Length: 584
Image (cartoon, rainbow, N blue to C red):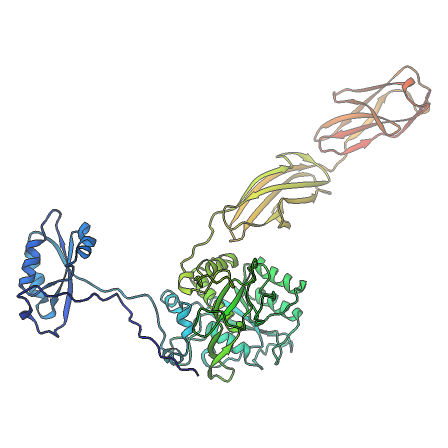
C-alpha cells in the first residue's frame, strides 16, 4: 500500500480564539482551569453594561469584544462569556438575579455531521478517495439501506471480508447457474467500493454500507464478455429489483441489443452507471455513452486531475458526465485489501455507491432524479471540461431536490368528447412539462393499457371494430422524474350499419326520362347523418330530411345507369341498397 499521512480532522463546532481577560479578573482561576461558555440573553431595551461588569467582577471573560461579534447577536439581545468551571454556578445565579437578564444558558456545541468510520484501511490513510468525494458528509445523514439493491455486472462477486452479508441473489450468464463467485477479482473489488461494510472496525469502508449487492456475472475469468450477455444481465437485474446498475466495463461498439437493454432499465426507473473506459482519448465507449447512462471518468491518485488512462470528452461532447477517483484501495477476492486498483472501473462504483445513499434518503427517486442529484451536485474541476459536471460530491448530492410537478396533456385534438365513431380512431395529444421533460404517454382503453408513444406529438390509432357503446380513452403522461398527469375522453363506438330501403321510384330495368325521383327510408339507433343517391357509384343527390326524397334529370346521365341509395349514420357506417338499372 502507498502510505499517506492523514490530516487531522476536528469534528465539532469551530473553536474561537481566547481573548484577553478583563483587567483584574485573572486571579479567580488557574490558567489551565476548564472554562465554560455561557450565553446571556437580555430583556428588551435593557442595557448589557451592568450585567457584563458584574460577571467580569466574578471572573467571567467576554468573548464578543469585537464589534463584529457583538453586532451579530445584537438583534437577539445576547452576549457571550467564558467562566471558570468552578465558578459557573455562582456566576449563573448572580446573573439570573439581575432584573435586566432574560436568561443565562450554557453555550452548547454542535458537531459537524461528518461520520468517519473506524475501519483500519480508512483510518490508516489508505482511502483518501473517500474524503475527496465527501462520503463522510453523506454518511452523517445515511449509510444506506438494505432495501436499496445495486447490481454489479462484472466477473462475479466473492462473498468475503467486508462483503460478508452484503450480497444477495444473482446469476451467472457464463455458466447459466446461480454461482456468481468471482474468478477474476475485478467484480469483487468493484463491489467492495460500492458496499464494503464500513465502521465495523475491520477492513475498508465502501460507499453505501447498508446497501445490497446483486452480483451478475457477465464477464469471464479474463474480464471479457459479449454484449448479449451484458444485455441479459441488465434485464435480469432490472427484473429482480435492482434500482442501480453498475457496469465497470466498456466497448467501442454501439450495439442495439445493449442500447435496448439500457432503455429497458431506464423505463423501469433504474439508474445505470458505467465506466467511461481507459483509452486515454475521446473515443466514445459504451454503455457509458448511451443516453441516460451516467458515464464516469477517473481522476489521478488523491487529485482533481484527470488520470492519464481515463477516457474524456472532446470539445462539444458530453458523454463523460462526472469524475471520481480512479486510483483506489479496494478488496480482492481473497478478502485482503490492496491499493493501486487503477481504472475508470473503480471510479464508476464510487458513483454507484453514492447513488445508493441518495436512494436510501429519497426512496421515491427514480433514475432521472438520482442522475440529476449526482450531476447537479458535481464539484467543478477548475476550468477542466473533460467531464461535464466535475467531481462527485456525495454529501451535496443528498440535498438535491427533484421534479415533483405533474406533466400535463394540454390538448387532445381528436376525437371530440362524445363523438360517434366507427372503425379506426386516431387520438392526437399535445403535452408539456416544466422541468424534467415528458418521457412518454400511455393509452388506456376502458381501463386496459393499449399502447405507449415516446415521441411528440403523441398519436395513437385504436380500432373500435367489434365494439358498440361507450368507449373511454385515458391518456397518462409521464415525465422523466416519474410524475404523472391524466386526461380522459370518451366516444360512442358504433360499428353497426344502418338500415335503408327504396320506398318508391322506377323499378329495376325501367326506361326513364325527365326528372326521376326515388324515395327511401333509413334508420339507425344512433341516428342517420344523410342519405345519398348514387349513379354509377357517384353521389348525384343528398337528403338529410326525415322523409328522404332524391331526384335526378335523366337527360344528364349516361344511357345506362346503375342507381343505388346509400345511408350514412352518425358514426360514419354505411349501408347501400341493391342496384337498379335504368336506361333512357
